[in-house]
Picture 1: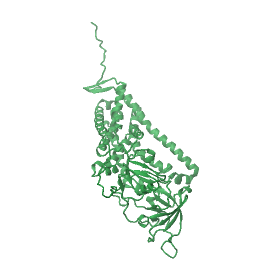
Picture 2: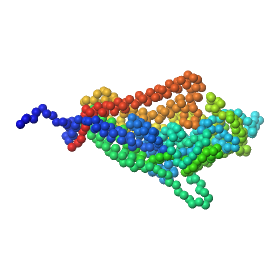
Picture 3: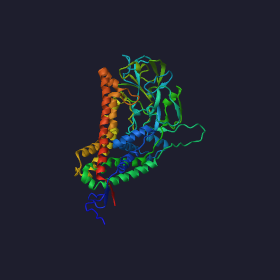
Picture 4: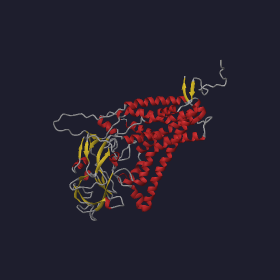
Length: 532
C-alpha cells in the first residue's frame, strides 16, 4: 500500500481565519466579481427623461469609471422627489424634468404683425432736452440678438445633458413640425403650469402620463446593495491585514453608495421614456409660421407680476407694451409700442439683425420665450443689468446663487463620505503585502472616481464660459472673450484648450483602468473565498 506523501498541502487556505475557505481564483470568478460589484451597480443608475440608448451607454460607462457621476443623478432625483409631493401626473412629469416648450432660436427673425413681449435694451430712454418724456415715434437704430432670459434658468442641479433637445434626438410625445427659427427647450422644473382649456360643452377629461416605475432596477439595486455590503464585510478580515486600505473588497464602497442613493431615487421618482410638450405663446407664434403641434399636455402660466425697474437700462415689458413688429426686412425690423400712454419707455425702435454684427453683444435683447411664472421664486426672473446679459448669467450663477452653492456642496459632501468609511474600516494601514503601485492606483481611483465625476459638469460649464459659448440661445462667449480681445490668436488658444480638455479627461480615466487591473491582480493572488 502506497504511503501518502508527508509534504502534501491542501488545495485551499483559510488565511488564518477559521471558517474561511479560499481556493485558487479562476478567470470566471474574477469576471463574476467585476460584474457583480461594479457593472451591475452602474446598471441601476437613474435615467433622465427621454434618455437615448447612446446616452444610457455613456452614462453607465461614466458611472463605472467615475461613480460620483451616478451619485449626482440620484441626488438630483431625490431633491426633486416628485412621488413624495402632492402632485398630479402632469406636475410630477414637470418636476422630473420631462417637459419641453417651443422657443425661438438664435436665427429667429421678426415678422410684420407679430407681438413681441419682454424686450430688453441696454440704452437709456431717448428724451427731449426740454422735456422728461421720451419722444414718441422717433426712430433709434439698434441691433438685436435672441437670448435665453433669466426665467429659463433651472435651479435644481441634475445630470441631464447640456445638449439641446434637437441634438439629443430624443422622443417627444405627440406629433409636431417646427418651422425655421424655432426649437424645443426644457421647461424649468418649478414653472407654474395650468390645464389646457377644454372645448366648451365637452366633458372634462383627466390626463395620465405614461411612466416607468422601473421595478426591475429597484429590485436590482436592493440586491446589489446587499451583495456589495457583504463583500465589504468579508474584507474586514485578512484582506485588510494583507493589503491595508488598498484591499480589493474596499474598492466597492463608492459603488455601494451609488446603489443606495439610486435605490432611494427609484422609490421617490419616475422614469419617463419621452418628453411632453407644454403650450406657450411661442407655440402659437410658430403655428402662425406653418408649425404643427399636437399632443400638448398643459400650458405655462404667463407672468402676472409688475414692471421690473432698472434705471440704467430701458425696460420694454409686456405691461408697457406689448411691442408689435411694424416692419420687417432681411436686416432691419421696426418695433412699435402698442401702449401709447407709457411715458418712460421708447415708443418706436428700429433694430438690425445681430448677424450683420460679428462682434458685440447687441443693444436689444429679444427673449427666446415669453416670461412665465415660477414657484417660490419671487425675484428669480427679475430682469436687470446683471441677470439679462448673457456673459453675466453663468458668472452670477456660480458666485451668487444660493441654489447653485447648495447643488455644489451637497453632492461634494457625499463624495467625501467613502474616504471616511475607508479610514474607519482600514485605519489607513498599508497592509503587510500591498505594493506602492496597488496603493497608488486604488487611492487615485477613489479620488478620481468620487471627485472628478462630481466636478466634471462644472468643468464643462467653465469650459463653455471660457471658450465655446454658454448653453443654447445665449451669445457665444468665444467671440466676446477671445476673438474680440485676441483675434485669431485667441481662437487658436480656444482650440488648444479644447484639446487639453480632452487630454485631461483621458488622464483621469487612467486611475480607474489601473485600479481595475490592480483589483484583478489582488484577487488572483488572494484567491476566491467563501465562509463555511
